[in-house]
Amino acid sequence: MKLSRNSINQLAAALAVAGLTVLAGAQQPLQLGGAPCASPPFLHCPDKDCTPDRVINPGPIVEMKTRRTYFLDYPCDLKPGEKVTFILSLHGAGSYANWQRHYFPILDYKDKYRLVIATPSSPTRVWSAADDEYLQNIVSSVIEQIGRDNIKAFWLVGHSQGGMTSNRIVRTDFFKDKVDGWLSLSGGRLGGQPGRAPTWGPPRTTTPGATPAGVTPSSMASAMAALREPPAADFSFIYETGQREMDDKGVPETSAWAAKYNCGPRRSAGEIVDSQPGYVYDSTRQNPPNPAWGLLPAAGKAQVFVYPDCKNGRVIADVVRSDKGHTEGLEPKVTEELVKLMLSAKGGKLQQQAP
Image (cartoon, rainbow, N blue to C red; front, top):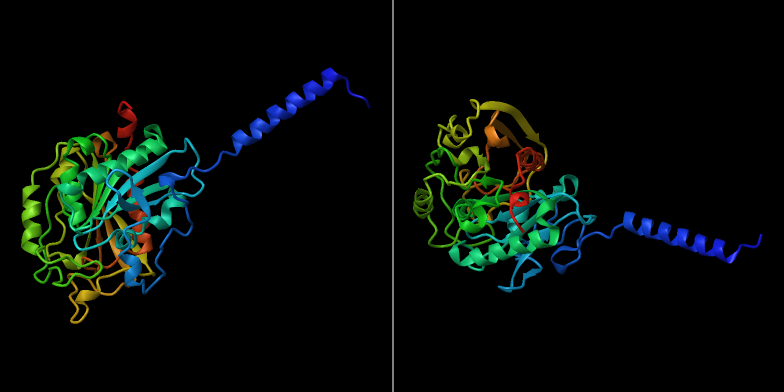
């Protein structure tokens, strides 16, 4: 059959449209931070015995203004315009970015729950106001690359002194109108603090996960006292801690932060049973062992408590890991439950802001 010139032109146009449709439906994944995405994530620890040179790594992504590095974990098939939850995860005093990635290993859930996780590292290993510009630049860069309308919620996560730092920066002009939630990993509890175990205290040496000289229980208590007044910002709050970190009274049953949102009385939301241990721990207090500070990684259980029916869609919760101290890395199921709690809370602050 011989086609006319007009028929050939029409066929060519139809094929071109079909080709464009296929290309549009097969958008190329985003590449954030100018570095390739990897699955499993870059420098992921094995199930046990993560080497010191790996856990002290500060990350491969360069923050261009300060020239400091950080980790950025995200789904490798992330598409332009896809909705995600953004998390800034801060290590504790004396620790490192890659130790934090494995202490609270949400990098294992980035694909399933569509998470973008920035994990920075302090060169002094203790966060201070001198780091604020670096943290702000990381957040601004991620927001710019993803688009604020595509970030369903923005959470701060901080372990120990990283939690205290979260408490400090959420009060600053840059963060207070952006943050939808704060997850404190043994980093202070809004609404009423539990008491410390008598033997709680950081080690004197400075190895991965430890606390450096000059950071003592009394200095940490002073830092918390300076932030005792609740923030004026509006956000969800989840507190996680090890049972052995606290005195016999445990976590208070009431919460002034929950009262702020007219939540119902705290109730149990069930027990989590983990058959697998976490990835990391602090080797400096194992001989002799100090249970309040943390033992070797092991399977475990956790109790979840929630304050229901909070106004404005806020989530307020306490999670207590049974027979755990300050530095055992979180187990997989309790990590996933914390992610689910975060995702169940109201977000959208970034979407409400003008670009």
